[in-house]
Image (cartoon, rainbow over the protein chains, first blue to last red):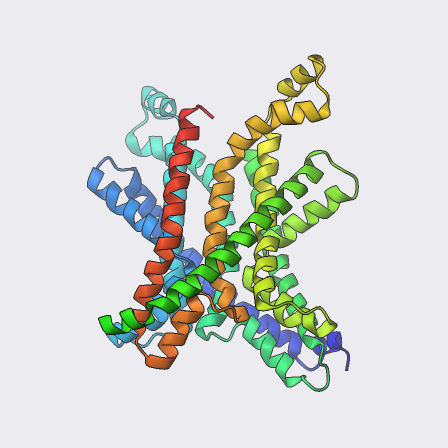
Length: 222
Length: 217
């Protein structure tokens, strides 16, 4: 059997897609959760209270300074050891990516709010809009417009980073790929190059359209 | 916390930290070189090279480093191209980083206003003089924050090296957890090691950025 035939032999390709779905599911759940938490965090970062601001800033920096893989290790191995709570790899991954995603989203939300010029608020008020109206009709539409491309970018980053979960024992696309390669070790010794190239392209097929879309949006809103 | 464990095993961390920094540093330097070359190819729209550089940039930016490393380390040997773990780490990081760097450097180059290029041309500067005297000084200051952010990003990405059996910090930590089950100590040393590597870089870059900001760029 030739290497590339392994990809389509039996239900191998479906299994790879199934593995890809495991990572995608982790990233989609984390993205959804971090959007909710990140918007709250971003709002908290724009308040005038210095203590709140400082706490948010410290949280952001602590999350950012460590590689995501270190966080995965801390939650997956460390938390289990110190609290006795047994987390599955997937749960640990969702926790880590949500904590990280919320911090990054919060920073983006803050950036979007800060980038709205002061005169937008002032002219809204001068037109006689109430506080709620000001936000609904003037501030939020502009904020969302600036935010969307960045959020999509962050999502592609999160999708790419979830590939790391294979290192804490989650059976995702890289693990499935390895199983397929090992099962065909004697029939198709060169399967590895095809399987990993296929996984490489799968990630590209997911992330590339998203980055093109976010670039288009960013250009249009400029 | 078992302090005797820490005093016994911290030399292992120093060893692997040195490896992480060496491989990471080489990868980052290479990625800057690749990034500059790609940015030049795309800025001047050199036929063929422009297309290759653009395609490469998208490929490297839209795939995870761990998948790239697996392809290099487990895939390529099957068709006769064998890399050692160390080479694999450097090449992988340079492949990933080259794309990010090229994007940042290109946007720096493109940020120079057209009027400046026209002014340079009307002063009689040739292409090379325009590049060194007009474009580069402006582009460099615009691109610096993005390039710095990339460097920190790449430093953090080095944590993936353990997946291709490089004995880096993650590898050491996982090894100690596996052998002695002293998870807390191993992870604490891991965090401290990464802090020692990344924090100073991050602080220096923040100061640099502030300085650029003050210069009104």
